[in-house]
Image (tube, rainbow, N blue to C red; front, side, top):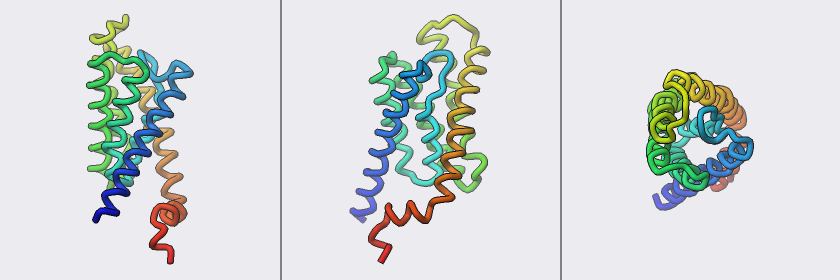
Length: 169
């Protein structure tokens, strides 16, 4: 039991670290925040399809990313909640492979435009932000996330070999 708990904590920590790193990569291209965002890290929301450890990992990773990239407190709160909702719903709907990227796309497309408009007071309409955030999420979660999902599924036996070495005897 302790080994399983340790494995989940380790996976969550790795996912959080990857989320932060990928957010910094996107941020270096000016894509992590504001009206037009393509957070490469959001592709990791697909990991909730494979493990419940992704849920706290993504949430903590998003909180840390938002703090470290200088987001305002309400963005840290609501942006992280959007990622948490997306991860929870992806995990809940994991039986339906093609639905996996929809929860984070929908959660972020609904929540983040309000953050951009009312927290940052960025000029533009809510419809504009819905479109720009939605497109960014489709790229991040829909295209990159599903590519990651199918890559993991294709190589799952190899991943299991490294993740569960005690079962390889």
